Amino acid sequence: MSSIETVYIGSKPIMSYVTAIITAFEKADEVKILARGRAISNAVDIVELTRRNFVTEAAVN
Image (cartoon, rainbow, N blue to C red; front, top):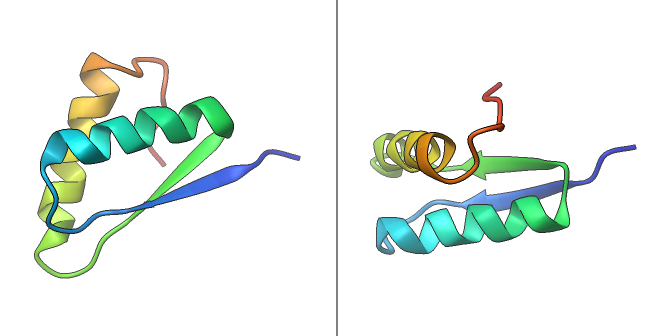
């Protein structure tokens, strides 16, 4: 069974969340990104930045 880590997106700098996602991928097979309201657009940007530059083998569901 795969383990899942969760990263909550808020108002911190973008690279803080990128680092958190990379660290979460070291611990788990899946990473769930959660955001609400205005942070949703930042969450999309953070996921795309992470996927294109750091964790290129990640798939978005």
